[in-house]
Amino acid sequence: MFISNISSERYWDIRKPMPPIQINTNINVVGMEKKQDETLEVPYVLSIAYNPSIAQIGIKGNAYVSGEKSEVDKIIKDFEQKKPPAQIIIQSISNVVFVESVIISRILNIPPPIPLPQIPEAGTKPPNIKAHGRDYSL
Image (cartoon, rainbow, N blue to C red; front, side, top):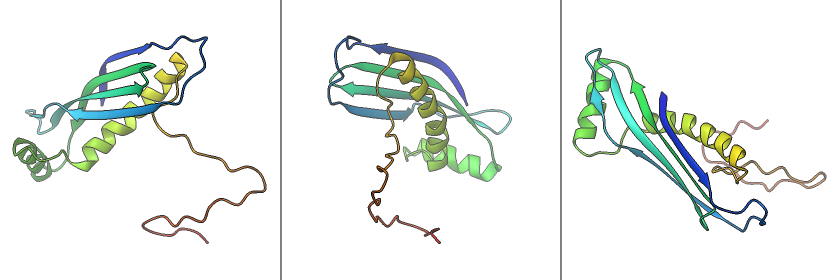
């Protein structure tokens, strides 16, 4: 995974209080190319837009995918048939670019583009929300 371009800008005056915002994120896989060593090069673009327009962040780069020949062939075939990219590719790209975007947001002094965990106040019981999937509670 490589990042080749980062662009970001804060538009909101640093002296003004931050208004309530909405953050829109978009990851696009803009191509897929099979290399001679049976790997895939997957260029991507991450766009983060704040509403109201307080800032923007853009990250471009390439992910490199390797695996069994049959898996690589299936991924490229699905892409050529205009099917969505494999979930593992999107997840791998997301893991890298969202960490970087949080660092960029800190530098610009803007809210991070991912929700931060909420810590309940001392003495309050967290809501009893049952997560989907396996229950690991004791």
